[in-house]
Image (cartoon, rainbow, N blue to C red; front, top):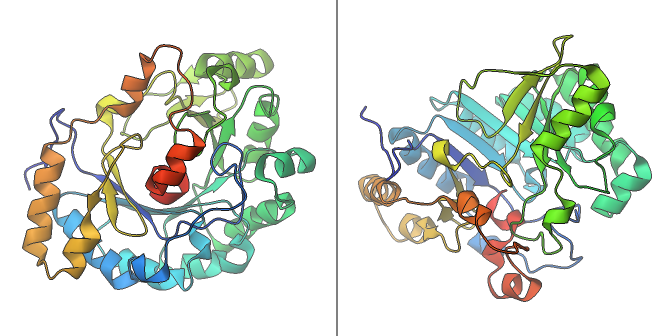
Length: 340
């Protein structure tokens, strides 16, 4: 199969599928408000519609699918969708979750054929976790990670958004915890997208600062060779412990970005920073055949020119991408709508 390349020669390989816009946390860097307007049930793609559109993406070269939200474990009967997707020729089928419902669902997810999990965890301190997420749920998340191990999940990742003055003193504790539960920690620079309406550069702990803090504690940190297009740069400590840093704010990976995002209501976004998406739901429900869907997706990808994070680098006096009123007017700009 010839590669389907965009205008910067980036292949179509990686699809993130949001299955719901709802979440049971209110993290300060993503959903800082208490109340939101949710998609109506009739607007959300069915499992059969998701399966069909994934088939079309696979025919165009996609071999990695990640299920996201909102919080994907809030979507009823999610293992049914995973079974549909697990039967496709995918190199990787993963799910990102806040972990709160993993205790109840880990075994069913594994039995359905899910390959991997990524769990968001921004603090190991109960009071701080509650301050960041506005929910007292740390114990449930930690229990969920243990439940995932018991269910047989391997190569689990833990994602931590690092915010200066909030949780930047927990890098070592999180690395030690990751080693304890056999999970690779990925530290993420605080990003200025979607609901991060209180973002400022002053709150960003950069990759260089993270690595310096880790090296001060552990000694030399070795950079690992880049072998894929994953967003994280990976590093290794002298004892073999590996971790990642996603530096989308200060050192974006736009040049190799092969991912796009499908919202729960069928809007296809070519970049996390994109102001608008492409309506696949209307095609799915309007009688379009697979060939028509394939042609639309292929032609749209070939015209893709997005390098959103790089463009943000040169913004003078950079502040949050969106204010609250802008998000109210266009909820699709919210991170929890487009799957992060």
